Image (cartoon, rainbow, N blue to C red; front, side, top):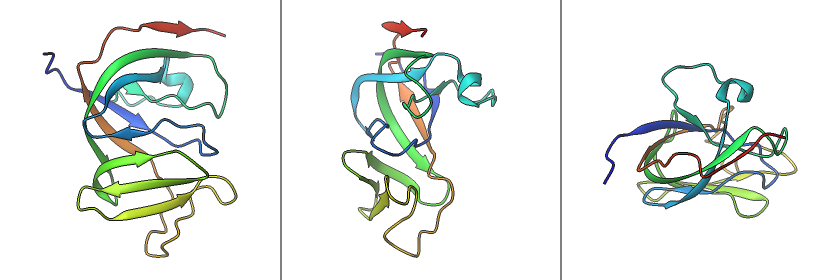
Amino acid sequence: MNTIQTKAIWTPGWYEMDQTVAVGMEQKFWFFKDKSRAGIIDEAIDLVFFNQLDSTCNCQVRFAHVVDIWHDILGPLARVDTDGLDYLFVTTAGREIMVNAEEQPGKSDDPVFDIDDWSVWVTLNNVSEPISEIEK
Protein backbone atom coordinates (compact mmCIF):
# COMPACT_ATOMS: atom_id res chain seq x y z
CA MET A 1 0.00 0.00 0.00
CA ASN A 2 1.32 3.44 -0.97
CA THR A 3 1.29 5.57 2.16
CA ILE A 4 2.80 8.67 0.54
CA GLN A 5 0.34 11.48 1.16
CA THR A 6 -0.59 13.92 -1.57
CA LYS A 7 -2.12 17.33 -0.84
CA ALA A 8 -4.94 18.45 -3.10
CA ILE A 9 -7.42 21.29 -3.15
CA TRP A 10 -11.08 21.03 -4.11
CA THR A 11 -12.66 24.37 -5.09
CA PRO A 12 -16.32 24.35 -6.11
CA GLY A 13 -17.40 25.54 -9.53
CA TRP A 14 -21.02 24.95 -8.39
CA TYR A 15 -23.86 24.14 -10.84
CA GLU A 16 -23.33 20.35 -10.42
CA MET A 17 -19.87 20.65 -12.02
CA ASP A 18 -17.92 19.22 -9.08
CA GLN A 19 -16.90 15.80 -7.84
CA THR A 20 -18.15 14.38 -4.58
CA VAL A 21 -15.34 13.66 -2.10
CA ALA A 22 -15.64 11.59 1.07
CA VAL A 23 -13.15 10.23 3.60
CA GLY A 24 -12.40 6.63 2.70
CA MET A 25 -13.51 7.02 -0.92
CA GLU A 26 -11.20 5.22 -3.33
CA GLN A 27 -11.96 5.70 -7.00
CA LYS A 28 -11.08 7.58 -10.16
CA PHE A 29 -10.94 11.36 -9.72
CA TRP A 30 -10.41 14.12 -12.26
CA PHE A 31 -7.62 16.64 -11.62
CA PHE A 32 -6.35 19.64 -13.52
CA LYS A 33 -3.30 18.55 -15.48
CA ASP A 34 -1.63 21.94 -15.02
CA LYS A 35 -2.52 23.40 -11.63
CA SER A 36 -1.27 26.86 -12.64
CA ARG A 37 -3.93 26.97 -15.38
CA ALA A 38 -6.43 26.33 -12.57
CA GLY A 39 -5.10 29.45 -10.85
CA ILE A 40 -3.05 27.55 -8.25
CA ILE A 41 0.61 28.44 -7.73
CA ASP A 42 1.04 27.18 -4.15
CA GLU A 43 3.91 24.68 -4.15
CA ALA A 44 2.43 22.84 -1.12
CA ILE A 45 -0.50 21.70 -3.27
CA ASP A 46 0.24 18.68 -5.43
CA LEU A 47 -3.11 18.28 -7.22
CA VAL A 48 -6.19 20.39 -7.95
CA PHE A 49 -9.55 18.68 -8.31
CA PHE A 50 -11.03 19.39 -11.72
CA ASN A 51 -14.39 21.04 -12.24
CA GLN A 52 -16.04 21.88 -15.54
CA LEU A 53 -16.61 25.57 -14.84
CA ASP A 54 -14.04 26.80 -17.36
CA SER A 55 -13.70 23.95 -19.81
CA THR A 56 -13.42 20.23 -20.27
CA CYS A 57 -9.70 20.27 -21.09
CA ASN A 58 -6.45 20.44 -19.13
CA CYS A 59 -7.46 17.45 -17.04
CA GLN A 60 -6.30 13.99 -16.12
CA VAL A 61 -7.84 11.00 -14.40
CA ARG A 62 -6.12 9.21 -11.53
CA PHE A 63 -7.09 6.60 -8.96
CA ALA A 64 -6.77 7.92 -5.41
CA HIS A 65 -7.86 7.25 -1.84
CA VAL A 66 -9.24 10.13 0.26
CA VAL A 67 -7.56 10.15 3.69
CA ASP A 68 -9.04 13.35 5.10
CA ILE A 69 -10.84 16.56 4.17
CA TRP A 70 -10.41 19.92 5.89
CA HIS A 71 -12.19 23.27 5.57
CA ASP A 72 -10.51 26.32 7.13
CA ILE A 73 -13.67 27.37 9.02
CA LEU A 74 -15.68 24.14 9.38
CA GLY A 75 -12.69 22.00 10.32
CA PRO A 76 -12.56 18.27 9.51
CA LEU A 77 -15.18 17.03 7.08
CA ALA A 78 -16.50 13.54 6.45
CA ARG A 79 -17.69 14.39 2.95
CA VAL A 80 -18.79 16.96 0.41
CA ASP A 81 -21.76 15.66 -1.57
CA THR A 82 -22.26 17.46 -4.89
CA ASP A 83 -25.33 15.60 -6.18
CA GLY A 84 -28.15 17.99 -6.92
CA LEU A 85 -28.60 21.74 -6.89
CA ASP A 86 -27.46 22.03 -3.27
CA TYR A 87 -24.14 20.72 -2.02
CA LEU A 88 -23.97 19.05 1.37
CA PHE A 89 -20.89 19.64 3.57
CA VAL A 90 -20.82 17.10 6.42
CA THR A 91 -18.44 17.57 9.36
CA THR A 92 -16.85 14.62 11.09
CA ALA A 93 -19.05 15.50 14.10
CA GLY A 94 -22.12 14.90 11.91
CA ARG A 95 -23.25 18.49 11.32
CA GLU A 96 -24.73 19.00 7.84
CA ILE A 97 -24.45 22.33 6.04
CA MET A 98 -26.50 22.71 2.87
CA VAL A 99 -24.99 25.15 0.35
CA ASN A 100 -26.79 26.37 -2.75
CA ALA A 101 -25.04 25.45 -5.98
CA GLU A 102 -27.29 27.06 -8.59
CA GLU A 103 -29.41 30.14 -7.81
CA GLN A 104 -27.11 31.65 -5.15
CA PRO A 105 -23.90 29.60 -5.40
CA GLY A 106 -22.04 29.44 -2.11
CA LYS A 107 -24.95 30.65 0.05
CA SER A 108 -25.57 28.40 3.04
CA ASP A 109 -29.04 27.60 4.33
CA ASP A 110 -27.65 28.32 7.82
CA PRO A 111 -26.87 32.03 8.43
CA VAL A 112 -24.20 30.98 10.94
CA PHE A 113 -22.13 29.79 7.98
CA ASP A 114 -21.69 32.94 5.91
CA ILE A 115 -18.56 31.58 4.23
CA ASP A 116 -16.91 33.18 1.22
CA ASP A 117 -14.54 30.35 0.30
CA TRP A 118 -15.90 26.79 0.29
CA SER A 119 -12.59 25.28 -0.90
CA VAL A 120 -11.44 22.23 1.02
CA TRP A 121 -8.03 20.67 1.50
CA VAL A 122 -7.95 16.98 0.69
CA THR A 123 -5.23 14.55 1.73
CA LEU A 124 -4.90 11.61 -0.64
CA ASN A 125 -2.80 8.48 -0.77
CA ASN A 126 -2.48 5.60 -3.23
CA VAL A 127 -2.52 8.19 -6.03
CA SER A 128 -1.85 6.57 -9.38
CA GLU A 129 -0.04 8.01 -12.33
CA PRO A 130 -2.46 9.59 -14.83
CA ILE A 131 -4.75 6.99 -16.39
CA SER A 132 -5.85 9.37 -19.12
CA GLU A 133 -5.34 13.00 -20.06
CA ILE A 134 -7.41 15.45 -22.07
CA GLU A 135 -5.59 18.32 -23.76
CA LYS A 136 -8.40 20.08 -25.64
